[in-house]
Image (cartoon, rainbow, N blue to C red; front, side, top):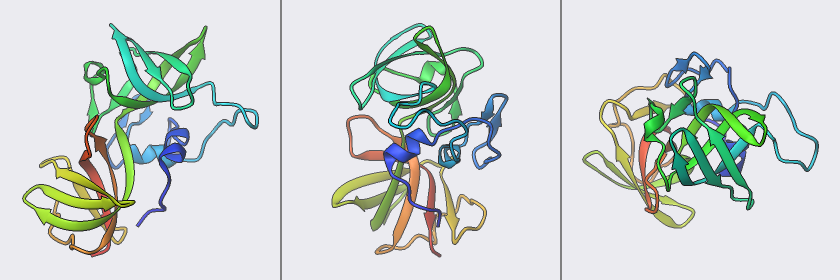
Length: 200
């Protein structure tokens, strides 16, 4: 199982150009959600926010300009381009970024606007306890909260004991702990599973 990293660390650790390729790489660098675990390549001054990183909830979108309210109270303007890599459960297109989505963006700050190279939409990293398993659904406990994990055929994968990812979820066991990287369904307690890490 990979090291557990908190949501804030997950966001601030998102960088471009690593070789993590579980989901796949794009021309601008890896878009795999695991890329967010990579070490930061450029550090801002101590105590200062990284100017080339933004996180928050999308509050408006006008064509390719997205405005997101950050958890630290800052308002981020993020420019999406044809070269922006977008992940929302899987690599996808710019039009999938919607008002209400949560996002993490990495790029270059220019004149107060972040020119985004990569955007991870609704990404979550959860350490969970498997409470029950149904057809294409996992009932999970995360820090005392019930979470419903949706297994998406053709997309969701499992990694058992550090082996390569496979689509077979049959080795998941009720009562066991796991870690999930997935896409949150905004304003719900539900996530779509990208990858679940578990012991076989």
